[in-house]
Amino acid sequence: MTSSEDFPTPDPNAADLAEIERELPLIEAEVLLLDAQIAVLTSDGGPSDLDWQRLRRAQRRMLREARTLLAIKPTGQAA
Image (cartoon, rainbow, N blue to C red; front, side, top):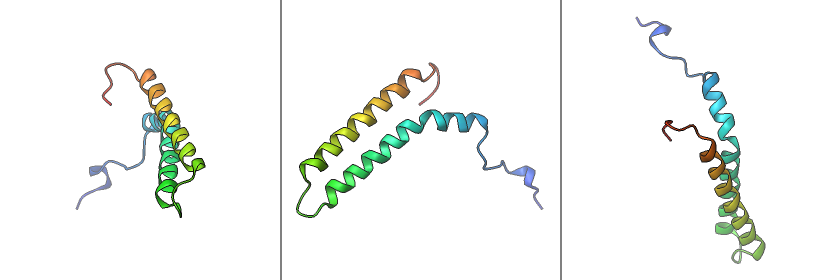
């Protein structure tokens, strides 16, 4: 028989949670970008000007958040 000590717990530790919280703005921006992409791809009669504007705004936000995250990422830490 194996004991529960043989397997690591799947729960995140404090460092994992801190990393997730640090990356949360980028994750949220990526979700908004995905929503905008879906709206463009599934709109009836083709995407409207508002759909394209929403997509460009979401792309800019995602890039801004990615730059911010990379700027504060400690050196020597793998991506």
